[in-house]
Image (cartoon, rainbow, N blue to C red; front, side, top):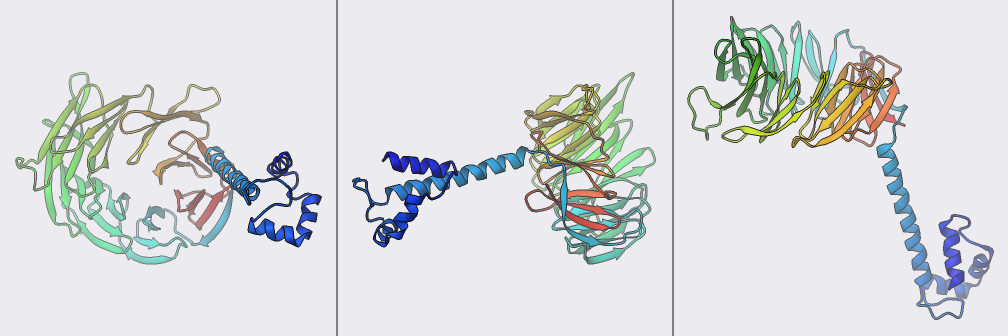
Length: 419
């Protein structure tokens, strides 16, 4: 028995898979047959047949499992500083062309038109328009392209153009729902109208705000089914800037007056430049000192409030995270990264030193880049990637696959694997 334990130890320590005595035993065909069949052993012990080989197999399986777990842990917590290009697709885009990930491909748009390209940068469809200053919003696989301070709006998805129309008032901001309904913030002299539009430009509902009564709209958000609208309002009073978050409900199940107002929640000495629906049942208002989450039932109300200290440089979010980038107090690290769950619990508080021009949540990761550098963080604060890039970066996105990303430039698209 001691000899078998010693042999097992030799295998686990990877010193030798077989020794000379074992090789001699394999030359004895009777013993070999017994070994394979598990009917007996060559020694005089009374151990059950096959027990030794079973222990060996279990030990090997355990070793493999431990190695896999250690590899996955290392891969998840290791900071990669390089990449390898796994595929490259050339395309000469004109200056000003932008990309937005949509479904399994990308929307490519500019001032003269829009097209959808697949993962190989092959054009699937295209449409021409003239929009001087195009802005976009995405919900699911539906995208709104509108002319900021202009009158043109286009609705597209991965299959093609769903509709286009012109407005009678200049568009300040637009958002889209998954079903193609858009909400446009329109300027009407001193007032602001928020109008819900069908894909063909048919007005579906309208909310009108005045500076004197409600305040100045800063941002709008639309639920994925287009039944709920959220508006952030700023109010300038005597020596202070107050705000309010207004919720509107356009569903037929809600009994309300013609304003469709479901709730108006007021705040003092705080401003909320950004609002969003984390889901159809939860919304968030992101302010200059933190964020507030809300339940969005028939009577929306506050759920959780998070305060952060210091200047907020950037914000980002997805359905499970709300994040901030702030200046760092560290002499070596320029920035501080904070990420919270919607319930207010903190997921990470870490620092980094490299500058960035774009930041987004994509497939559960935080992606940052400037024109020549890539960074990736997990919501838990682990730096996954910190690497220079040899080409000028236009858009940096996550694509399916472990450690797989895509970088889009004016010269085409490259798929990369970080190493």
